Structures are given as C-alpha cells and as structure tokens.
Image (cartoon, rainbow, N blue to C red; front, side):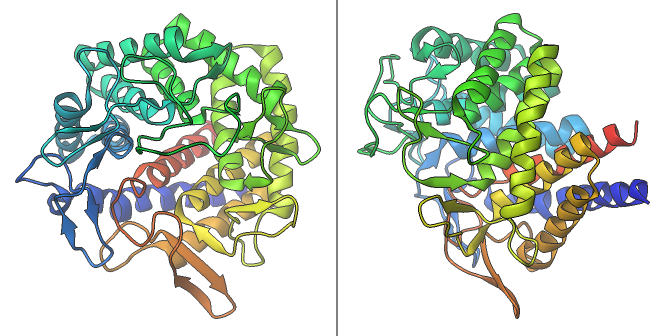
Length: 413
C-alpha cells in the first residue's frame, strides 16, 4: 500500500513540474525581447513591466530551475531557457572586476546596487553550479568557484559562519543586505544569520564538482546548525542569533525549518561523515515530529510561521513554505517510517493542488487563506504577482524534483 502511495506522490510531483510550473516559467510571455532577460514584474492579471529592475536572486533561481529541469528531464525548451538565462547572468550581473555578482540592475543592465549579500550571491553560485552540472560549461564553473573562494576568503567570519553583507570589493558591509539600498538590520551588529541558501548553493556546487574545499565548508555549516542554531527546547532552527548563540526575536519560520531539514540530511549523506550523520538524524527526527504535531492547520496546510511569545500562527499560507512542507514530511517518513508523515505529505500535496494551482494561467498563487468554505487567494508574502524579485519557480520546482528523487530512493530505484 505504501508503495502505491509513494508512486502516486511521484506522479503528482512530475505532473506539477511539467504541466503546471515549468510551462509558465518557460513561456515566451515573460521574456523581455526589447531589453533582454526577463520582465522584472508580471502581475496576476498578466500585466508586464519592462522598466522594473532585475534581481540576481530571481535570475539565479531561474538558472538553477532550467538547468536542473534539463539535467533531470531533458527537453530542448529547458536547455534553451537555461542558456538564455546564463547569458543574462554573465552579461548583466557578473562582476568581472571583483568577482561575484551585482544584486540589482536596471532593465538596460545598468548596475543599481553594488553590495554583495550572501543571500543573493548564493543564488549566483547555485545557478552557475547547476548550469555547469547540466552542460559542463567551464566558464560557468570558473565564475562559481571564484565566487566560492571569495566567500571563503573574504566573507567567512568563523567556521560555518559568514558576514551577511559585503561591499563590491568584498569588505564587510552593514546589515544583511539582500540587495536593497538603505536596508538596515534591526538586530545587533554582531548578530548571526545562518546563510541557509549559501549552504544550499554549496551543496549544489559539491554535487557538480566533488571539490574537497566545498565539502569542508559544508561540514562546518552542518556543525553550526546542529551545535549553535538548533533549539532543543522549541525543537526548531533559530535563523538569527546573537554572538553568544541566543535567539534574537520571537519569530519561528516553519517553512525554513522544513527546508533546512532535508538540505541538512542531503548534505550529511553526501559528505560521508558517519558521526555527523548520526547526530543529524537525532535532531531532524525531533524537529520533524514537532512540525508534524504542531505546525499544520486543521485542514492539513503548513503554517508559514509563528510567534513564540504569543503562540500565534500566521493565518495566511505561503506558496514556498507549503512546498517545503511536502519535502520535509517525505523526509520524516524516510527517517522514521511513521505513516503519519506520509499522510501529512499527501495532505499538503492535496492542499497545493486544490488551492494554490493557478488553472487559468499556470504556476501557483502566492498566498492563500483556508477556512471551512475552502481557499481564497489573498495578499501576503511577495504580493499577488506571478513574477517578481521574490516570486519565482525555485521552491516548488525544487520540491517536485526532491519528491521524485526521494520516492525513487524509498522504492529502491
């Protein structure tokens, strides 16, 4: 029975990827043929704005998605879009003088922001790594490895820890950056924000290259997660802490708990450190049971986040967190063989299919509120847009590929 249920999940994930998500993101409609690249914004009503600035985060994510789609599924459309996006990355975002990439450019390619936050540089590395993995393009590898070395030599503050933001020439800059001018951190200057997307980028780079220095950095970051950022009292990962390891703020992000959980497991399996793997399995079982038992609403949808001081949960469900919930619950089933995880995974997939899929224009809606009358599209994270600097094909495409891969593993394929 479990075998049939797992097969059904894999079929659902592939259908979501190939019939719902990728057709929209591969469409000619979002390509700006006047200025090059992709439109900066496409609204829910399909209005296109070609004067909106273009972001490194979105471009890197799209490069990863198209390259991963080609590597796993083949298909000339995926290869074409990956190569188109790589040229956009190379010609507009890459910084040939200092290395790494600019975070924001105009529709004409003029540089608008020069800071280099690790959050954004991570997607530069990640997209290039997957492009190299798919096409063996040596230029993409050189750009990715150069940025990796800069992160290690200039941005690293301690084993497994990195400055949130760097200047163009790789000096430490204020705050966490994220490529927006004037953004100041509300936290102390020595606050530590775990660079989980950099962790993810290094994973992709190691998968593509097997580089020993990347492996070392992954092990260090894994140890930071387990030793400094896991909170055994609340059974979650603290994303922002003080220099002495105390949680800053009272916010919990269940989507990030889910995302980090399977990334961490994928890393420790890949690097081959048995002691690290044993420690990780214990932590992840605790965390995933916490999510399973406390962080889903009565309809089976993952809460986006909560507040430790009030125990309140956000009533709006967010597309990317829901996607990460599928991957995390499937990992929970792999680690424990507890059927409740598989059931939660299936319920989450059903919620996504029922309420998030945009059957008129493809891909998913951003935010949904669910009650006894069903689901309603509402405002929230990333607004209503079908495409903007935060709304992208990354999390849901990654979930689909992750689900297919984990089901194959569970079925011994």
